[in-house]
Amino acid sequence: MIECADFSHWQTSVDFVALKAAGVAAVFLKATQGEGWIDQTFTQRCVEAHAAGLLYGAYHFCDDSPPAMQTAHFLAVAAGCTPVLALDVPSGIDATTGTVFDPAIRATATMTLALPKEGLDGPAMESHVGELYLADISVPPRLYARPPLNIHIDPLFACEEVIRLR
Image (cartoon, rainbow, N blue to C red):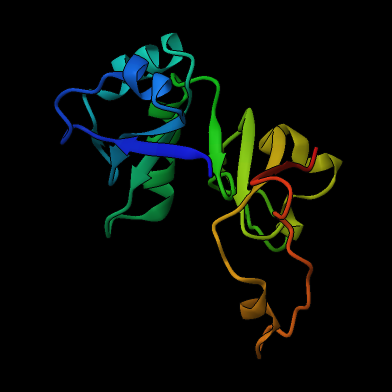
């Protein structure tokens, strides 16, 4: 299993070097909430996570304010956090159709979960998705076989918990 952790201003002290030594591979850092709030620990923690050799990414906590305003706010703040690791689907992209909305994340890498997303496939998506990985979240294959999905798949993660797709 790949160890990941998420942090926000609620955790007053984080030792990223110790996390890396303990086997944590990646951290997700709260950047924003709503259409105006910024986590004041975000920028410094990006620097500290990078220095510790961790993969790191930003996340946004949604509220009931307009989604487009929230997305624009998040992207403006998260732009300082490079490289960008998107979890499941880069914000602003339709996972089914591949439609890119404005604004949208341009990730260095995307770790999509459980099954590949059709909307992330194709050369036109590379500038938004970056390197593409598929990660195990422990969904038993028998659940996919049940109605209404009726998908019969071999265990995807029998050899690896993360598969590089491109």
